[in-house]
Length: 397
Image (cartoon, rainbow, N blue to C red):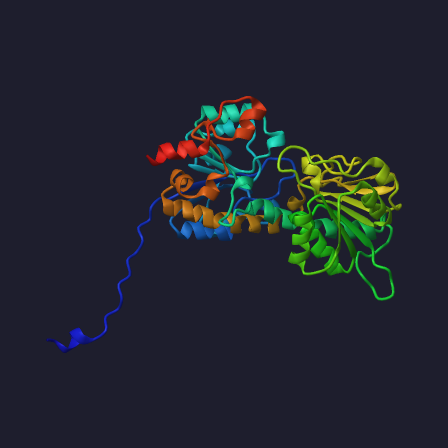
């Protein structure tokens, strides 16, 4: 026996075979004041290094301060024609598609975007059906713990931002009452009322406490209030939503945050106009619930150009898309959620295989190859729909 054969050999590891190379198109967002981008350059670089192909429309990341050069250096192909983007196998965008964008799609593709049931036009669903599109609502995708990661992450951003916005409006030199949203030794801290103990409410409470404000939280669920107290590790004033108790708290409040969410349809209007009338002059309302109708009777939708109005001497901030105000942070947050999902999709061999194998991703599918699979959309628009689980059983067999 040769002496060399007894020497330790290097281990030969099996290289995993690439199952499916994805072809992803990212169009420039055209929705009003939508500044986020679906994938940041770092995420594009990760996908390209794993053998996937990414096309992005020119200036697609400009609103989030990512240049075309950033994307091309990450390995993306820059397109100067929107139609070219809509020929890709997977169309990945932030806002729901417009009618013109659906028209540009070649058909038999996968669309991943937000789904806004309240503003989703029936004609767009019908056009997606005609083109045999598989449509995935990213706000309905669940993670391994059953949480909606996009909704939670955007809620964290909105909760933090609501307090920062309120702070700015309280101290604003023009119309604010010249108060600092925070504690200073010997000066009574401002009072903040947070209505809703979900993700937005929790992060608004964290931010307000961090600044040193006095906080009161209202919700109609005891378990949510209990969980919020446990999660923030701080004994804050909590109360069930009782109109008299809420009205009393609002009379003393300097800031009121509307963080009520509805699982379906409009948010309940829990603060009457009379309650707002009785609030202190110069106090601030930030209604984060405005994207679902708002929880203050005096709320009406504003935008990032003209974000506030004054009613009953109370400053109202009612911009629906707060995350677009910090579009760069929000884009990174979205990319962190979707990079692993897209890599998993490639490893599974494509979108169809991921739908079959991943129940969390499957929960976001509202149309499969032109067949509507959302019971909610089917009932709202009186359209035929099929249960996605039954379709998957057919695909497996």
